[in-house]
Every structure is written in C-alpha cells, then in structure tokens.
Amino acid sequence: MKVKLLTTISFFTYQLSTSQTEKLLHGKVFSENILLKNVEVINKTSKISTKTNEAGEFSILVAPKDSLIFFSKNYFFKRLKISYEKINQNNIVVNMIPRPEELDEVVVKNITFPHVGPADENSTVVPRSRIDQTGVYNGSIVNGVDFVAIFNLFRKKDKRPKHKFKELNFKELADATVPLAFFSNQLKLTPEEKDLFLQFCDADPQSKVLVQQKNLLFTMDFLYTKNIEFQKLKTEPKN
Image (cartoon, rainbow, N blue to C red; front, side, top):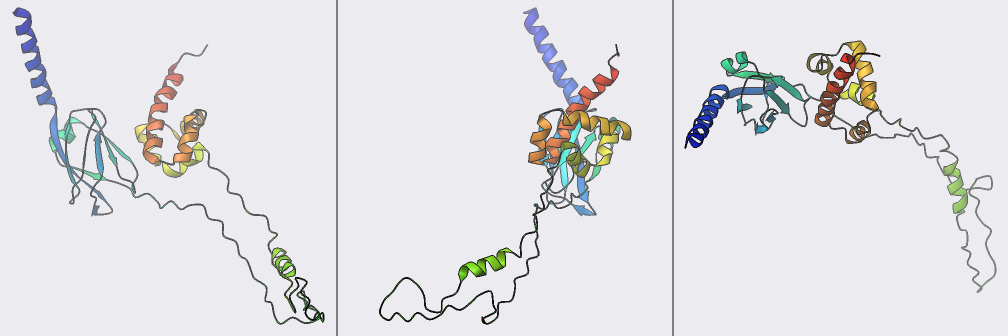
C-alpha cells in the first residue's frame, strides 16, 4: 500500500514539475519583411514539431535550454537556444536568410555551323558524274550527295577539348552553403580552427555522402555532431 502511494505521489510530482517548466511559446518567422508559411519548427530536445501558418505564426511547447530548429527548403537552416527571457517574452521573431538558387552543371559550347553553298568543281561536296548505264541499277544515286564529306566538314569544326567540372569536396561544400555565423556562434570555432575542423570532417566517409546529397540540414547536423568529437580531441592531454 505504501509503495503504491509513493508511486502515485511521484507521478503527480513529475507532472506538476513538467507543467511548470514547459510553456507554449509563440512567434513569427519572416525573411526580407515577408512572413513565411509552412516553415518546419522542430524542438530537437523534446522531439516535437509544428509548422508556421499563412501569417508566419507558430506555437510550440518549450522549456529552458531546449533547442529549436527552423527549416525551409529555400532558406538557410536556423537554430535557436531557448532561454527564460525568450519564454517570458513569449512572442519571438525569427529572421531566415534566403538560399541562393542552385543550378545544375551546364556545359555551353559555341558551335558555328559552316555555310554550305551551291556545289561546284572546287567544293568539298562534289557532284558525281551521271551514270549512263541505262536500265541497270547498281545501288548508286544519280547526282547524289557525298554525306561522308559533309560529316567530315562538320566534325573538323569541333575539336576543342570539353571542359570537365571538378567535383566538390566537403570543405568546398561547407564553405559555399553553410553560413559563417554557424561556425562562430553555434560551433564556437575561430577562423583558424574552422579550416582544421573541416579537414577533420572531410576524413569521415560520411562527408562523401553529404557532398552527393547537397542537403544543408543534413550537412549542418553532421557538423554539429563532428564538432563534439573535435572539441574532445582538443581537450585530451597530449602525451
């Protein structure tokens, strides 16, 4: 009986403490003075999520020290640490930065087609002499066109080597897509540490997969995880 009573008291104590720490946080998401709809708002700590409405507004349960993630396909990923001040403010405003448009690799070549005028005796395309074998067909076409000569004429004009695009490595991908503020504010890295850190990440086989995917959210989550390992290496005593 006593055990059952203690269990019930513990359960209600936990529920009370949870209700006192978790609160419904309201806010708006915009970019360049435009309110954004359908932005994913994810509480990474409690594993719950919601989306902004037509007016860019959202509401989500949070507690102090929770981590919120704001994600939209056409904007840079945004991470926000929840503090007591933000909970008491209860009407936060989140500004997202648009991503530049990603274009597929395109090879553009300038091909000038030669002008083919009427054929004469000095032309590359030479008229064939008339066959006088009346009534006998040998597979030839009277006054036919020399298609081999035409093909060779066009082929000679396109002997420039095609430009091959160099494949991105992970460091180049991170420099091109991840905001600099993410390295300094979220990962707490100096500019000197950033280059060393990206070399550390590039040694991980998972980085090659991310280069193929080119997904900013996956890339930043990978950087966040690798930074924990990187910081541990920095603090380990050297022999």
